[in-house]
Each structure stands twice: as structure tokens, then as C-alpha cells.
Length: 274
Image 1 (cartoon, rainbow, N blue to C red):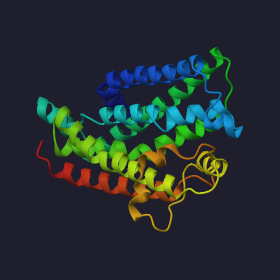
Image 2 (cartoon, rainbow, N blue to C red):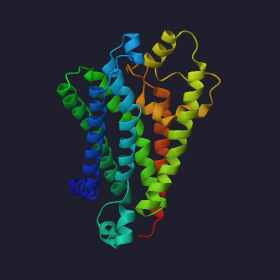
Image 3 (tube, rainbow, N blue to C red):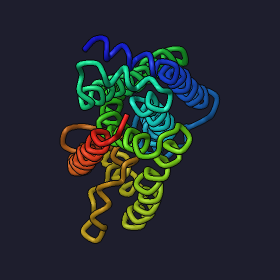
Image 4 (cartoon, rainbow, N blue to C red):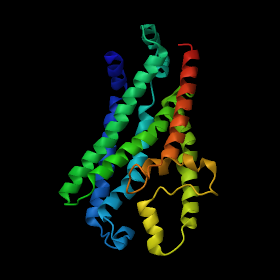
């Protein structure tokens, strides 16, 4: 088992290290932006909430860090036995006393550990960067958002594996995965954001308190069922995250879809002639 884990690590280590660099750049850039720009008139400041904590959530976990993390998780999902088939080395791996399912799930375990490491590394960069610019924030909240991003982002790993199995080749599989993610990640997100903002009524304070303290707005009765597949919204969660406002329904929908995608990948992999 250790040999399989080490083999998967050797296959992904370059992309993983590149992901660490990208995560560090994104976090450092956003921290530097906050340090050099005036955010005293932001909505968070007007509402009297911890402005720096809101800034980290908004610009890292809602947007830039989340997107960079998802991209590198997709890149980590490439390769495996399909790549070995193309390079002519799959016969050796298949000949070992290990089932194809064990090959796949061992590699998935490594991908999960690497994706979690990318998320936790971002927390470390935020801690160090915030200390340098003398800003304080809730470490518990940042850790919870890091965990939520990985928990909801497992579907990215599953889709990456499926696309690489169906469309061998780094470029084709990456384009296919981006196309599949484009619907729940971009189009659904943009459509539902417009709907939710339009549905908010009342004063400016009521509107933005709802947005900040319960940013994962509950799915309204008139919203379509596929609102639960708003992946970006689920990965970000509300600003003040706790067990009560965690998007459990959306997480359950994402996990169910992940299981289905992995089952299809396993079934297809069992039929491939290596």
C-alpha cells in the first residue's frame, strides 16, 4: 500500500508543488492588496463587522483562492493507468497483485491529501501574511472554510478522473473537465446570484447583514432544484460558518454526485483493455 501511495505521489508531485506556489501567490497578493488599499468604506466596515475577516472570506474563499484551488485539483487528477497505457508501462502495473479498483482509490486518497494540503497551506500563508501586516482574524473561521472547500470540492477530483479516463490526454481531458464544471460552477452560480440579490428586500443594513451573516442563502421556494448544485456557493459557505448554517443539503447533493461519477469511472476502468 505504501508503494502505491508513493507511486501516486511521484506522478503528481510537480503539479502539487506548482499548486503550492500558485496558492501562495494568490494569498500574498490579496493580503498585499488589503494592506495597500483603503477598505474603511467597504460594506463590512459600514455594518461594523470584522472587516479583515470578511475580506479574506470574500476574496479568497468566494473567488480567487477557490478558483485556483479547483484548477490545480483538476490538474492533479490527470494521469494514472490511462497515462501508463499510452506510455506502454501499464502492463507492469496491471501485472502486480493489486486490483484496478485499489489502484484508483489509492490514487484518489493521495489526491485528497494533496488537495487538503493545498487548502491548509493557504491557511498558513494567511497566518504569516496577516501577522506581517498586523491584522487579526478568526483562525477558526478560516480553518472551517478550508475544510468546507475541500469537502465540497471532492466532485472536482471525481470529474477530473472521469474525464481523463474517457478522454485520454492531458489537454482533451482538462478541456472536457472544465466544460463539465462550467455549468454548475459558472452559469448556475451567476444565475442564482442574480436571483438571490433580486429577492433581498428591506434596508441596506438588512440586506447586507443577510448576505454577510447568512451568505449561503437558503434556497427559496421558487428556485429550481438544481440550485443545490451551485458548487462555488457551496464551497464558499457563509461568512460566519457554523454547523447550523453549513450548506448540508448542497453538500449531500455534491457527495451523491461524486459517488455516481466515481462509480462510472470504476466501471469504465474495469472494461479498458490495457
